[in-house]
Image: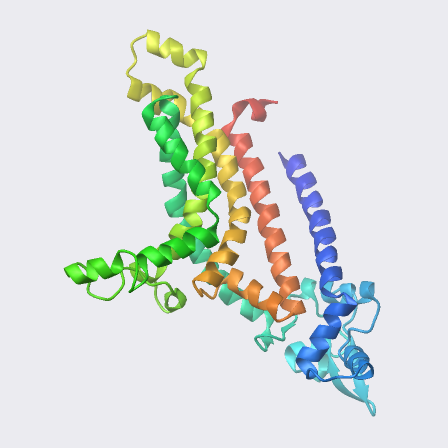
Length: 361
């Protein structure tokens, strides 16, 4: 296991390095830099003024040099006037001219400066990741039990009416993207003019005008059933269908195994067979899928957070992309890469411990 972990961690570092360089190259293309210059310095700039702004702000050096500065293996850029340090990468991050020319990149914990939020990227991301972490926690709390129960009930009796009904529901949820289900939820449950909210308000079953809120920004102040239900359901519903289908397929396969038939012939009750013999083996494959769902759900988080105006990681990534915030985009890509690689590693380790055959081999 130690050798396995060493190899996987080394591969993860190489993968992260390659992916971050690709993202860095894409975000630092000349067209992107010209757009950034015109956004920050004013839209009506001549070509010469654009080139001057790019050089004065450290974007004129070769790309590999800038990538090294961003990583922190090369000293940060410095701009001087009359022998006095005016600006620089390290100076912009800390407002300390004494740090001019030092290494102040990713390895030193300096993520850069956000041009969209006018703050250090690390400060922006830490708050946004906390908000998204809370959303993801509730999504998993809702999604995982719902998906496992649906898959197990469908797989217990293959071909039955229950199996067909639950399988249809799982396929429909997977085939419905977040931007569709989110809009449907808002129309049905968070509108004061259409859906069921006007009916419930007319009958006096709800106090306000709507059953749930279609805007989750207030959830940053405090989570309530009204402002957090729809974002959680939107992400959970899309993810649960695939997990339920995998669970159903695994449960169906386990229920046809020889040891299950032997238990039935011995007169063991059906509920005991499912709980004591089939369930553990059937949950091995869903465990791997659930862990891999976490990075996949990041896509849904971006859509959902923008749709419900929830200022988390996905909303911040969208704002960075729309406003051409290069440093924030790079930091967000690092977070996404780390989440994907770490969850894959946890998935592999968990699979080894859950499956004795893999552990013995």
